Length: 125
Image 1 (cartoon, rainbow, N blue to C red):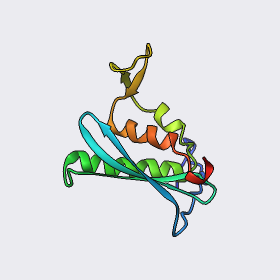
Image 2: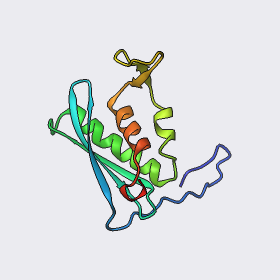
Image 3: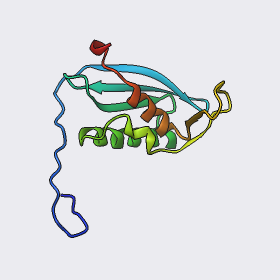
Image 4: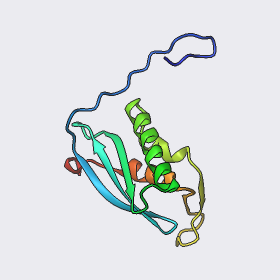
């Protein structure tokens, strides 16, 4: 159980996932690597989880992406708003953007967080 600095217990509830849930799959890219991400939604349209896969199964990048998805999913299930995720991650100047001062995620974790923050349940469009 999480504790505060004064050693007090803090009660936090993780959202229970339904056995079956709607999801949507997207293709994303980062620095020449292609990934497939699947974003899972609750019945009310809330984003609750993300999974990712790549063609390079068993590589360090594939393991990093899978572990990152677990951390993002747990944060969402504990109530972190999806829009807050990319705000907390590194960004770098986007050299290909037409807008001045445009940035892009610094890592694949940021690309996944951006996709999660922009996800809208298909029945909410």
